[in-house]
Image (cartoon, rainbow, N blue to C red; front, side, top):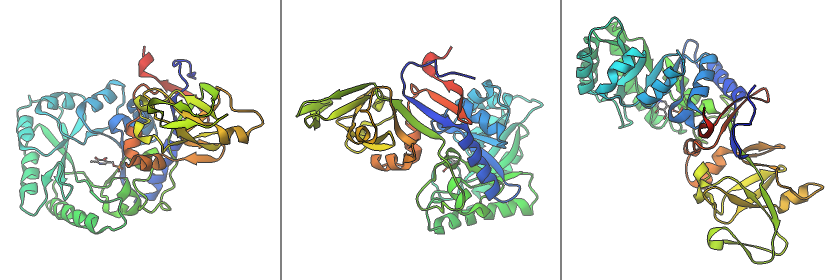
Amino acid sequence: MKRMDNFYRPTRAEISLDALGSNIRAFRHSVPDGMKLMASVKANAYGHGLVPISREAEACGADYLGVAFLDEAIQIRQAGIKTPILVLGYVTPQGLAIARSLDITIALFRDDVLEAARSLPADSSKLKVHIKLDTGMGRLGVLADGSGDAMRFIEAALRVPQLQVEGLFTHFARADEADKTYTNLQHERFSLIVNEIRSRSLPIEILHSANTGAGIDTPELGGGMLRLGIGMYGLYPSAEVDHSRVKLSPVMSLKTEIVMVKELREEWGISYGTRYFAGAGDRIGTLPVGYADGFSRMLTGKAHVLVRGQRLPVTGTICMDQCMIALGAADAAGSAPVAPGEEAVLFGSQHGAVITAEEVAAQLGTIPYELICMLAARVPRVYTRGGEIVEVSNPLQAP
Ligand SMILES: Cc1ncc(COP(=O)(O)O)c(C=O)c1O
């Protein structure tokens, strides 16, 4: 059992491995039988920690791991994780040899990369690829626009002896919206190619398109594998998807402790620019967390935290490493005034009260995806199972 003794500031992100497992199981049960499940662990597993989350997803039976670029995949392999990995983004020709040697699957969509694969030295092992089609995201992928380019690219890839074309995929742009018109259009464009592959019995095993939004609302459009990202972390991709279909529990909470409490004189300024002045006798607590941790300065004047289950306003400008809170409601909630050392929750739950990542993201004018990805490396990740700490990751004190 790892103890919380390799960091010396009380700010930490608590990551519930129980919630992660329960979210994965919830999707397993809700998607059609036989549909594979890819755990999207790109961007440091959406801020939750690349290696620990990859390991847990593997233990929970994920069929694939998804990353954005090759370096992320290499880090997973270096940690000894054997589950198949797909690099969803661009891999340079220089990366092909190491991808093959580490059994990392890459997304293929550029002619020059296809040509580079033809020049790979002969080897008993093949480089696995999933061909990426653009059916209306306008980002990466060969255009599936009826011109025939997509089929020509697929046929060319199938003829390269160094390659094993294991999969074909596309990405939905609007699967998290209530109106499915555009998703259906993308699905139709993808299906035209899929049907041709099937009718000609081309040996491509995994044809996939769904992200979390489609996995919840339209899993029947997802093909052979769900690429599960935000839902695995217990967050819904939007308010518009049907939350009743899959029950999710948030995996990450951001917590700290009050490190100083003071009672102030009237008109005492708080923080840079003194945007806030205390009233006579106001009690203010200082939290050791700020915008360098990912608690954005743009939350100034908007954010709340939980102390003693009460919502307290963050007062004054959020600093790089610290911010202040008005303690009034929490003082009133206990028999003694709030003291240093008491827990403050920036998002997560406490004594039945909740501040959601969705709420904080909305205050920032963004989506929960960005909020959790913003959490800085200097915030230790504390992994829990059954209420016990099982691992602590703190890159600042890495051995
Ligand atoms: C190609 C691709 N597939 C799947 C996902 C997972 O998406 P989500 O987090 O919405 O489930 C992403 C994430 O953006 C992606 O880029």
